[in-house]
Image (cartoon, rainbow, N blue to C red):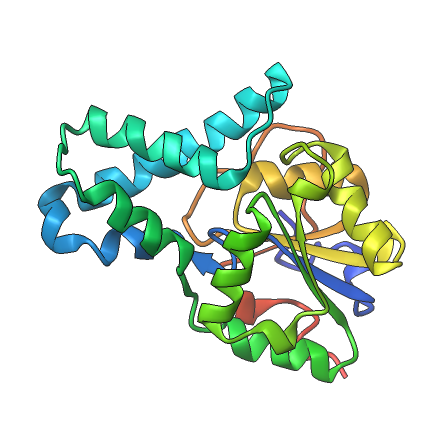
Length: 234
């Protein structure tokens, strides 16, 4: 990873647009389970982890099968699997967790980072698996709607990341060539795919994950969006 003097030259100049993944990058998906801590008890962290794993697996499996359903349905199906696996049989827990997921907390640095980027004249956007309604609620809950030029959902192309059509959506809607877009994601598979597509990529490795062995290679690795390499450039 290029974070110790080996940074790609493409990151020396500020990008024309910064595009962010949503879940895990801007919004803390673990905050849904945190809001139901009393009901989940010691199973909270396990539920949050397994729910996320199945959610992503179902997006990939549906894409391979060409059986698309929106992210709300996928998230609900993954939660059903998780609750059954952990033998959490409350009749109300599914609804409470889904409602919490609709209004996730943003990571603390997000509003400041987006504001600083806008102040530099850099376009900002979300590019996410999330359904339009999910993204609208998350953005509204975080109070960042005025800091984003675009909120883009895979529903516009009908397939989940990491299909190249998803990344092309950002190019088309922002009117910026792929090489001039910096894509930020906390999901390594997403970061590698965007790099293989031709975007400049910052991997926000919030969860201390291992690098992928896939096509592409992020230009920079950080632990928080506040460390974006071009934030302090004049």
